[in-house]
Length: 166
Image 1 (cartoon, rainbow, N blue to C red):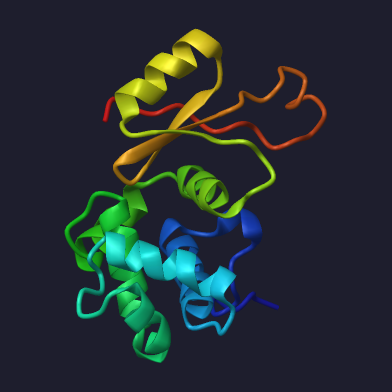
Image 2 (cartoon, rainbow, N blue to C red):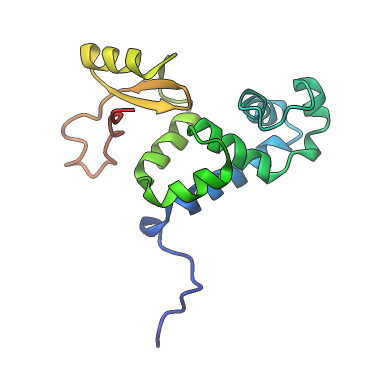
């Protein structure tokens, strides 16, 4: 019996567009949450990227029900260096999914110490001197610890990929 094409892809086959849409859904749910610790970080990102400009943070929190998925998609696009979601959407099929997964884990995970830098050049210099991998996140960068050499042999996920020439 043939497999229907309407079935969702396996975890290994997720596209970059699907990954960003999934992250946008997660962030949108957090933004409209009643919990301050969930909503405020996302609302701050919306304000920082100017995806929402009509209210200050306290006002936006009180009116968080007005935040729409399009605002979150616009913020994600601007954090990635694109002017709009439409531009980012067209570029996504050409972006490596593992890079997007790495960015999502950087922004989400709190169990690993992250060394943040105001620009990518400073992060690259630090990573070259001290070890680790520089990852661009919006206009900033973070240096993550390099995976131990035996991590790949132990079946663990590989560490983040280094920054390209950007």
